[in-house]
Amino acid sequence: MDTDLIAPGFERVVDRDPPLDSIAQGLTFGEGPVWDKRSGQLYWVDIIGNTIWKWKPGVGREVVLRPSGHANGMTFDKEGRLTVAGWCSRTIYRFEHDGTITTIASKYQDKKFNSPNDIVVRSDGSTYWTDSAGGLVIPGMVAQDVQRYLDMMGVFRLTPDGKEVQLVIADCTYPNGLAFSPDEKILYVNDTRLALIRAFDVNPDGSVGPGRIFHKLTGTEDGVADGMKCDVEGNVYCTGPGGVHVIAPDGRLLGRLKIPGHCTNMGFGDDDWKSLYVTTFKQVYRTRVKVPGVAVW
Amino acid sequence: MNLNFEQVAGPYQGAMGGLAWDGARMLFATVDEGFIRSFDPATRATGEYRKFANRINGLAFAPDGRLFACQDGGRRVIQFLADGTAAVTATRLDGAVHNHPSDLVIDRAGRVWFSDPFSKVLAFGPQIFPALDHASVLRLELDERHAWKIRRVTYDTVAPRAVQLSPDEKTLYVAEGEVGRKGPRELRAYAVRDDGSVGPYTVLHAFGADHRGEHRGIEGLCLDSDGNLIACGGSLEAGPGPMLYVLAPDGAVLEAHRLPGGAPMRCAFGDAQFDSLYVTSGDGCVYRAQSTGRRGFKRW
Image 1 (tube, rainbow over the protein chains, first blue to last red):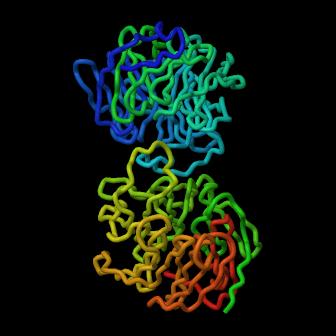
Image 2: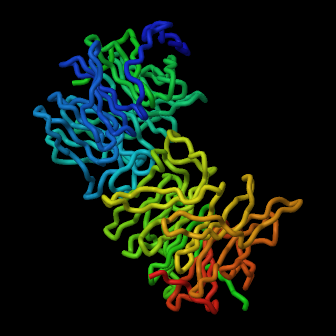
């Protein structure tokens, strides 16, 4: 795979010619990759294909849920339950250990969410997600109710007891990917329309301070700010023009992984958390990096 | 007869869209701003009918009171329901996502006939689905399981803009053509067959070109109670300017009126006596002429 070395330090993160394997093809809009460390399986979604998939190395892939309500971002909560940003169901839902599905959040101040986009669970058990409104209007992604009710697009938090939905960031233009720094003291949130990443200091109660611009995406190739994850050294991986951009904790672009196709999201996986699974519109790819990603639960 | 058009709403941002009379207020779509707004002739007050409409253009009420709308940016026809929600109809023709619906008319059976032209404005979000290889009039209808399905109606259009049905629903009127796209700008009348397909068309009115450019054709159509066609079109760039025509069903020009503002978009009858004509415009305004001497056609 081609890489762009932009600044020193990128060699620490990735080899000059890392491997690139296509592990799934024939998707319409891949998203939501997340690694299940128990079973050694990758979960991801095809949003327009309305399906949650899983794949086991050496075995193959199978359907987890179809229709999925055009599920988008996914993660595991602290009990290892697959937790889903329900893009067109306009809910946050999770798979219980017995396989049943529970909606854990669907409204803020009695108004339906816009369309939950991506999701992360903090170590205290609270769930954060971005709530952009694309799931109400993008062709091929059809919610039952396409009326938008909330006046803002922001980031929500469900408290660890699951009882309260809090608006933690209200001033986004089109929030999309989000990730915590390894120490969970910073919440990174990107904005597709503004093509930038903001950093927010996280308060002990789970709220966040004012945002600061952490990085502005550059490049003219296909690709936008969409999925985002961190490695254990605090580097931020964000989709952008030309592939996956790797940004140092100080906000400098280190380099780019030039994934073919339009990248939508990524997730670290395998036992050493050094495989990077990248979804594009049509495929899921796997490459290898040298710094482990932040483990998912 | 002279029609005196006055500005009753606007200017809003961008060219305006469709109109629909709800019995007390004239609804109009501010396409770029993403609203459906209302004008109350009793108070002259404007209001918000729906927020977050997301590039709605054509508007039409169904017999049961649901408001159908062409959401050009979402490449679909949606329904605004009385409980405040909005529901999608079908979005695919033979498996492919159709183009950018612009105008619509609903028949007595509740079928939704809509124009589906190409658009210079991209759909929302990533461009996953290519446009169809044709721009046609399509029709939404319920299948035997009460699910929406889409049928293709015209096979000889390249830029259908406005659609309308005659009072007996045996003729489909299509304003075809747009400046800059190959093909004529003309008003066509298609005979509707019993099976819902259409036969060959006759041309009721045609638009020319000169050294200033092609003359913009018709963008909006409505009917008066005698079944005459009210058509708005033209532009400031070439031709006689923004115009409103009254045409007999055979195409005879009964009246022609200059319109204020920019390029006319859509027209509809409204007000208590249903004898006022409203026209939306490319300049972001809504214009109205009262006491036109004609009444609008009520299909039900």
